[in-house]
Image 1: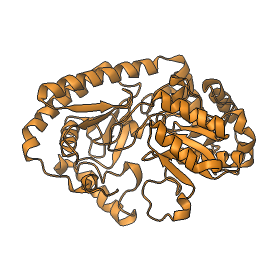
Image 2: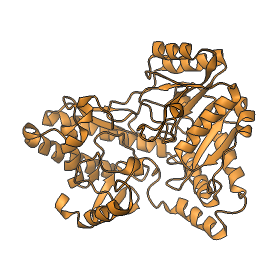
Image 3: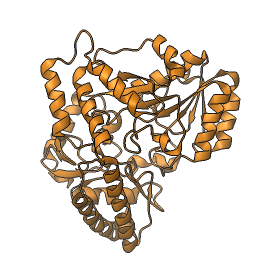
Amino acid sequence: MAGANSRDRELRERAAAVIPGGMYGHQSTALLPDDYPQFFERGEGAHIWDVDGRRYLDLMCAYGPNLFGYANPQIDAAFVRQLGLGDTLTGPTALMVELAEAFVAMVTHADWAIFCKNGTDATTMALTTARAHTKRKTVVRAKGAYHGAAPWCVPRPAGTIDTDRAHQIFYDYNDVASLEAAVAEAGDDLACIFAAPFKHDAFIDQAEPDLAYARRARELCDKTGALLVVDDVRAGLRVARDCSWSKIGVQPDLSTFGKCVANGHALSVFVGSNKARDAAAKIYVTGSFWYQAAPMAAALETLSLVRGTDYLERITALGQRLRDGLNARAAAAGFSLRQTGPVTMPLFLFDDDPDLRKGFCFSSAMLERGVYVHPWHNMFLCAAMTEADIDDALNAAEGAFGDLKRDAPGLQPVPKLAFLTAGGTR
């Protein structure tokens, strides 16, 4: 298949000349199989087309922003209408107030909302607000959890210095004793506990939040006066119509949303309780494009669909259909496939595959059959998907398992993933 990527190869060569590294960030294909396309032409519904014209059922959904389908006509029409009226203006439009009201009505713990562009913006504001509220410095957060690409939390430390990452203590997600030890180490300087809605670290199995762990995080914040932050940028609106931890009855003080809140249009949200309102009003945060009206119009339409449709129930049913079908087909082919995390945000990993050579083979075989999956990152389902799409994915998987069974004895280590077994880091 790699031989057919002529337009993609040409763009990669051109990009290498004018973009450092040729590509950067989470959408770089540097750690994906070599036959994965880097550049895409368009998206519609649940599908994307690469620049060489191949169509894929997209189980990455742009790494999450696609919730109701690429080019959703209702959402995009609202965006375009607002563009015709005004987008980046000297001040915000009334849509900003309407959208804040909509989030406050939707998120149980939220009494106010602040808008920005990226998840990193929102999580950094949450940390800053917690420090402003408590007059303390230390953040306690889980090892391996992703909270964005700012110097305080970026997973690759090149270019950062020790002080960028100072005043942080780490614990093991879902481990109450580890959490308690980190809080004890922070002592009187604890500003906040950061928590992911579930354990969605790359390269390893996902895990739902343990109720005892979540409740203990809430108790420790109440006891110390620190703030509890749930970073829902990745999972928000795919696990619940509220903050994801609402499903287990634990309410944070602050939470962050992003990815899909405007169905692919650039917008992220930082919400919080009245406890932290004064602190949020005192911090200085801004961006030239944070107040754009068109993404807010798209977000209002997205939230209308969130409230008024059964999208969550449908994608949950589709996710279960996919999980059950993959289990059956993997077992029939003689493979042990681990599927972890919410069914709406699945991750597939093979047993006895420490360097992901089986995962790479399977993913490439799926890609060849028109289904874009990821070998080490959680995936996403969207409301534009149908039972027929899931059945197409399962038929592709049956063939891909067959290819893997044939090729497994001769698979070699994946050089670009050598760090997984060498104890290194990306």
